[in-house]
Amino acid sequence: MTDKVVVITGGSRGIGRATAIAAAARGFRVVVGYASNQAAADEVVSAIEASNGKAIAVKCDVGSEADILALFKAADEFGTLGALVNNAGIVGPSTRVEDMSAERIQRMMAVNVTGSMLCAREAVKRMSTRNGGKGGVIVNLSSVAAKLGSPNTYVDYAASKGAIDSFTIGLGYEVADEGIRVAAIRPGLIDTDIHASGGEPDRAHRLAHMVPMKRVGTAEEIANAIVWLMSDDASYVTSAILDVSGGR
View 1 (cartoon, one colour):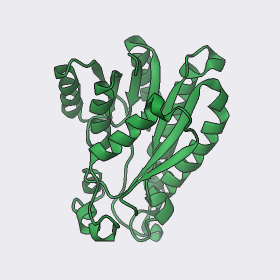
View 2 (spheres, one colour):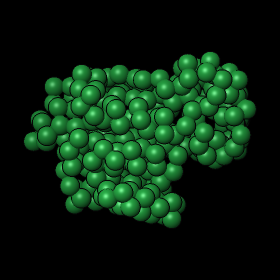
View 3 (cartoon, one colour):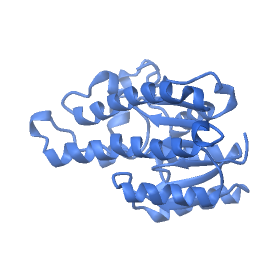
């Protein structure tokens, strides 16, 4: 690992927080993107600095292109971009498709799909050897929901993650000979508070019996897979999607 910058969207809590700390431990300078919870983002920065790492927190709603541009401008001032983790994502309350509003679906796609694509666009501009960059890695956060569809719960979220799968494969092929690797992680049931934002804080534990391993995963287990993909140990991995789901 080198002293390169990694941008992590949604880096103030859950999987993003765990990834920020794991990446810093491996020598990355970390840009912690956060949508609204500055206190949580500052806590992540403090935790990294307490271990002699380097990090900054930057407010960024990935549903806003202006925020994304500001996020990458801050990253430019922090060092040379070497990795992007497209972690920011939202879910809505459990409901059937017939009861979903256009506003809900549009916001879901704006954050989960368009936001990830725009962040990747900015990363490629900086990292591609075609553009004078030194290469790098993009890791997208998908979900096992992309395979299962999440009926009666949040089909819109599952569809957004299906789009991330396709985007990962296509972008990976597009920049494979430009020094950039692109991969995705598909987490299963993970013990984070994204379920609470969807109105079901106990959802992961309630469904744990459906996982072959009979337990939920931790944010740290996902972070370990992400930082492996970011490392030189994964140097021949691109356009790949890794399930980290306990077999689900």
